[in-house]
Image 1 (tube, one colour):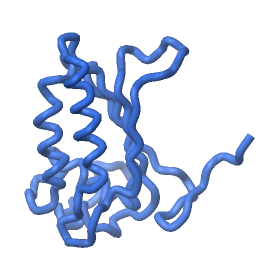
Image 2 (cartoon, one colour):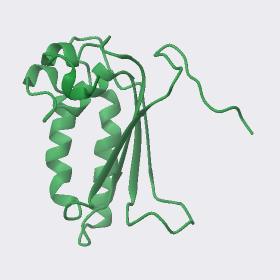
Image 3 (cartoon, one colour):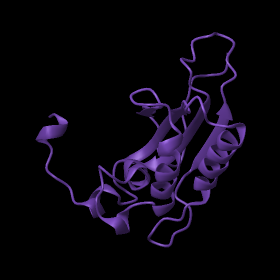
Length: 154
C-alpha cells in the first residue's frame, strides 16, 4: 500500500498522541543568508531551542520528547554550508505532525503555534531556496515511545 492508497485522515487523527506510536527523529539543518549577522544566528538558535517547551494543545504539557541543537563543527568539509542543526525526537507520528503543522495539518487548533511563529521568523533569514533548509525524518526500527534502541556501543 502506498501513501496515496491510505484512507484520508482528519487533522485530529493525524495529530493524535497515539497516531503511529514509536520514536520519530526530526533533523533540521539551516543555512542562513550571507547577510545574516551573528546576532541573527544566536536568535535563531535561541528561538528554536525554546520550542522544546511548546505545550500540546490538549493541555498535557510539552510534547517534544527531546531537542538537541548546535552549530556545524564537523572537520570533514562536507557540510554544504549548513551551519545550524537541530534534532527533535517525538513519541509518535501524531506528535511530529502537530509540530509540522501546515501544509500537512490545516486546522489551527491542531498546530503548534510556537513552531508556526518560528517558521515565520526564520524564513526571511534562510539562504534562498532550495538550499536554506534541509529536513530529514526517520523512525528507529524496533523502538517504542517507552524505550529506545540503537547500535551497541563500539
